[in-house]
Each structure stands twice: as C-alpha cells, then as structure tokens.
Length: 193
Image 1 (cartoon, rainbow, N blue to C red):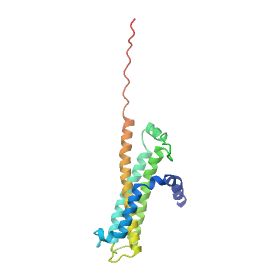
Image 2 (image 1 turned 60 degrees about the vertical axis):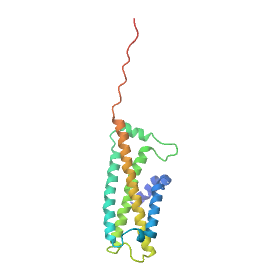
Image 3 (image 1 turned 90 degrees about the vertical axis):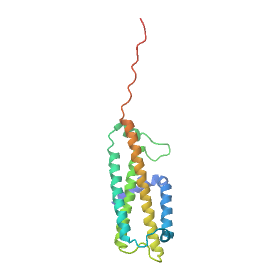
Image 4 (image 1 turned 120 degrees about the vertical axis):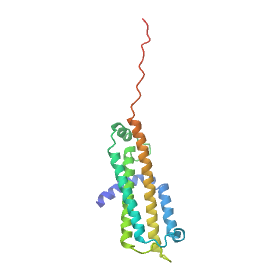
C-alpha cells in the first residue's frame, strides 16, 4: 500500500506540483498560520472541545470523500466514447498529461486530501478528546496542531469547490457531445436541362 501511495505521488502528483501549489494551497497556508497565531482572539471557540471539532470535520470529510469517489466513478464511466477520445487527444503544449488524465487526477487528489482530513479528525478525536480547542495560554505545539487542522481543512474545502465546478463543466461538455448534430441542408440540383 505504501509503495502504491509513493508511486501515485511520484507519477501523478509530482509532475503537477506547480498546479497543486496554487492559490488554494496559499490560501490554506495563510488560514492555518492565522488560526495558529491569532485563533483564540478571532474565533469564538473557547468552549468548543476537540471532540466537537473532530466530529464536524469527520462528518464533512467523509461526505466530501464519498462525493469525490462518486465523481471519479462518473469520470471513469463517461458514456460517450467520442468525449473520452477528445479528452485523451487534448493535451496543452506544457501539460504533463491529457485532459482525461487530469480529470481523473483532480478527483483522486481531492479524495486523497479528504482522506487526510478524515485521518487527522480521527487523530484529533483520539488525542484531544474532551479538551477545549483553545486553552487560556496555548503552547506552540497546541497552536501548530490547530493551524495544521485549519490549513488542511481549508485546502479540502477549496478542493471540494474545484470538483463541484469541474463536474459542472464536465456536464456541459458532455451535453455538447450528446446533442444531435444538426442535419446538413440538402443540396438542390440547380442544373437545368
């Protein structure tokens, strides 16, 4: 299993590294840092317990993971062979892969990012338990954990938004491929004898 994860990261994620480290990654990093540094002053969560946060994140991440996998299944079973062929032959000049591979990757990457949130939520549930999310004087370790959870949760939310938009765009393209082609007008014989 670990070999497969490493292969996926090296073969699929590494070539797309600069695409992955885009705006959503920067926003997630900023949210994580802000929550770690100033979270207790900004967020009204002084009485919230670790179990509350973990349960909410676990619920969201499990739903988003299921949605991502359902989207991946839809992509893998696109009924139009013409659409699949068009995506397979569509590769921008500096792209790592064709449009179909990129489509499969975005759904699998989003599923993987939500799997990370599920795992982090379970760890938070086990280790934080009924402790309050913010104590009066949080330690650096505590701040780092809150920042990490906030950052990966924000990243997951942004990835989820991307696949919602991607599914919409895929549906529009699929509709265009499914529409009947307009019949060519019949040519009339205009020669006179």
